[in-house]
Image 1: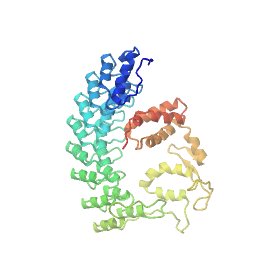
Image 2: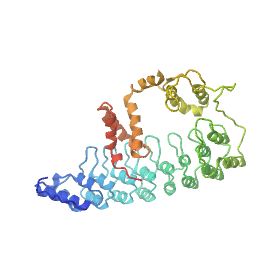
Image 3: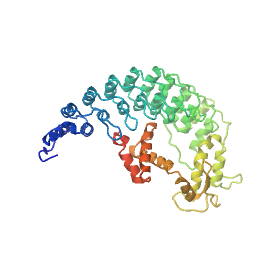
Image 4: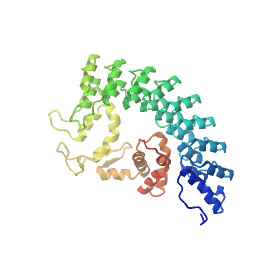
Length: 459
């Protein structure tokens, strides 16, 4: 800007946006020389319609995009500015344009739970089933927010209720169940979603709701016809899943709904699963009780006819009472196939670090007072010895290691767990970091400049 540009402070966002056009005019620039995206992006809600109209009339490209593919319509939707969205659509904005991360304006509106934005975009012809690269549809994203009004708009637009995302095979009902949104669960079931549908890891909507402890979601699914005894998730019943996650109130609810107290469980009996989760001295703190104390639940299981005969052990000592080494104890634990499925993957990493005690001091002998065996075998068959050997193997696969690290940093930065629709963003950050020799600063910069981070909202 030249010296002729007005420089007095603007008291509102609207006057700031309008001032951009006035500044350009006083400097001899054409309004079209300004970025329509910048005006919408930085002005936020309440952007000056006069400024935007001037830019559009001067020939600004309504579908111009930032380097990551984000358009002015994306930003207007993010700011929940209905007037600006209407103006951009009227000027020919493409409503189904996806940015580099596969996010369309409708997906963004559904994620934010904005019924106004969803309605505007659907009326303008946005596809209700346009998926992200991970397969998440707007209906799945809306189901996670719990906004039944948004879900209703998408169902009215004939959104596919059975669509599943690519990473876990979850559909909208599973997302709603995992978040405990009872009203959304009821709407999706009424729209024809099968309540016994399964994810690729054999988890039903009921199992999702039970695992997360959502009583309202469980009630809604049972009312919609979910089978209270249908096993899944490693052959665990819904009742068994409630017990091992210490959701004792839910366990009582399931018993009252007809759950079998003697259902098969990989841990033995359900009574044993209850005592195992509460038993002290197993290297873990007790899990807090829920609305029903564990003793009361044990009585409820017994009253319902629970079998007390099945037994399964966790042996931390030998037959003559001597303490086992950690490696020996884990070998006994892995003898149970249900335990081995996870421990065969993670135990070798733990063995490599066994020389460090609970506060990080180096030691040469373990709990059994025998020399520590810190060797391990990775899932790909590679053998290593100790922390230095593990490190040497990890650095042989820098991309895989950096992907995992980025995933964890992303979780910290966003204040939420990483979901399947975040995968394209994480891959892009890792690719950019690779060109910079995987420097940590490059990963941090990629996260900070990513769309999910910049568009996150305070809860």
